[in-house]
Image 1 (cartoon, rainbow, N blue to C red):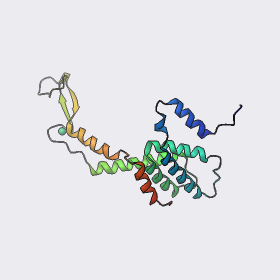
Image 2 (tube, rainbow, N blue to C red):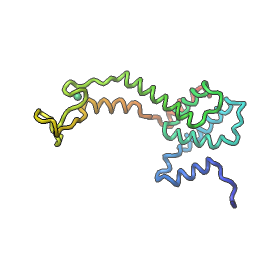
Image 3 (spheres, rainbow, N blue to C red):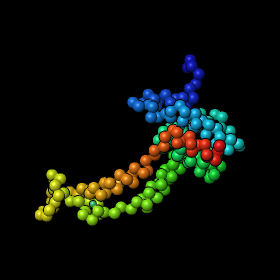
Length: 182
Ligand SMILES: [Zn+2]
């Protein structure tokens, strides 16, 4: 090999970029990436007995990939939760587990706060229609199918919309400034 060994993180960045048609979705914008690096550095100081010199770059890249999926602010929240619960620096897979668990409890809370109430004109959120989509008015149901009623479609849209991560970089920074690491 003529060049120096490529770090895992560099390799990951390169191969992800090469493998995907939209590599930008696999990287954070520069400002957010800088915030992530600061965050990881602060977290590292919270684990003073663990030597992370060799793995920090790869860990950071792993966190970056997770952050492109869940948003930086959510990642920071998850890292804080993990920090109070585990003795070793969280692996990106553990970070993802935490985020999934956060998402699940958020979803649960949203569903509890927005119970589905059928409009009363359908059967629990579904209507029976003929093959051509017109309402079924009786006769043989052999060629009918169930379609989701608009009341249920709207409800689904509503509860789904509320769980979508809609955190902008600016919001991530606002939250960062008042976080426990700062
Ligand atoms: Zn309905």
